[in-house]
Length: 195
Image (cartoon, rainbow, N blue to C red; front, side, top):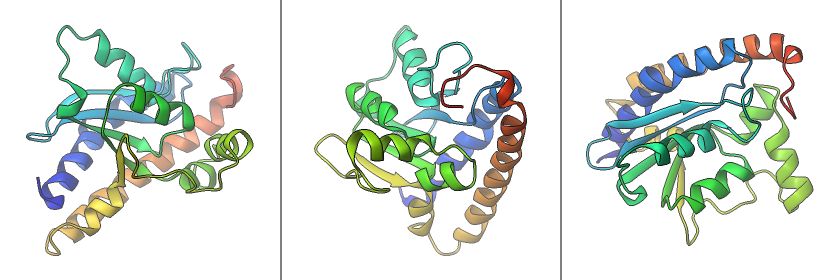
């Protein structure tokens, strides 16, 4: 799949699958993080999920997705799937993606976005305090997987497709901004650790 097609499929997965679940999750007091798995063959969405920390503090969007994926009757093997995370995965989610056997992941927002735009600094704090890593200090290409940002994929798309892709990405970012405000306004009402 070209970067043009991949960018379209990744954005569609967020727009049509992850965001609707995240709206529901935020309304229940959960953070804004979500994830989806898509088939490498055609970019179709197999499954999407969102953060479900109000049920279990370990159910970050990515980990909750992996739980649901492994509860499916006959899930596709990770080697056949693209892993999409709305936000650059925290250290727990990075490990879960690795242990689940994925050779890739894509993220829409960065750790710095989570800290600066969404007032959720824990990913970078944990990487610094536990692993002594500065922002961007882990290897996005390693023996287990290769990570790319959705922005990088859009940058590699056909120049004629980029304006529409950027417009869609901006609309997604604006919606996450609204959801973040909703989460921040109500987070004192839940007992999520590190809210």
